[in-house]
Amino acid sequence: MASVDASGPASRPGAGAGWRWALAAAVLGGVAVSGALAAYADAHPGDGTELFTLWFGSMVAAKSWLATGAVVLLAVQLLTALAMYGRLPGVRSAPPWVGWTHRWSGVTAFGLTLPVAFACVWSLGLEDEPARVAVHSVAGCLFFGAFTVKMLALRVRSLPGWGLPLLGGTVLTLLALTWTTSALWWFARGAA
Image (tube, rainbow, N blue to C red; front, top):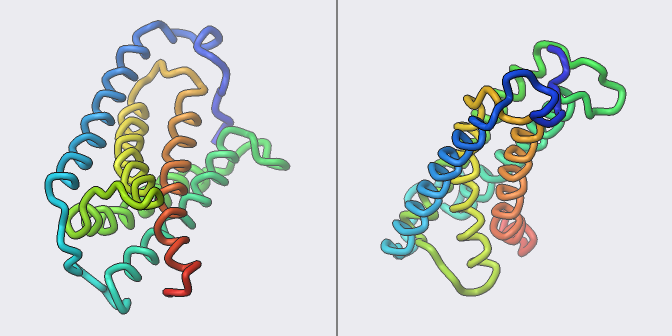
């Protein structure tokens, strides 16, 4: 797989202004997803009922470990993206398996976040106190909106070279923030 051109739209043939409208539509889709999650979680405050525990001792343990798995896969996402964009030291051209690994680590990471989000939205609701929980609630909703934007932007043919790295970095940052304010906090308290 050759390196991806990370230059701006001026150097790419056929990169007209149409990408702006397509990206705006993708952003509107992301705002709708984030807003819908936040509105539902706010309207359904939940009672803390444990929906699932899997093989863990509690729903919080299950959520923390699933989210940690997603964050580990996000590290794979970052490394493979850097390799595909020719930004990984010592890697000039990414082998074909790097693209496959990037795609499937992302699919798996997203899949791990779904039961976590379901438990948060259904069982816990959108909380605004304390500050850590408020940041977690907002970052979690924004993560799914940013993911929506990134997935829709993958189909925008004339998107500038900086577009996908920016969107991918936003998704990564929001999931890391969501994880830090929940699972990492839980692990740090010795609750594992």
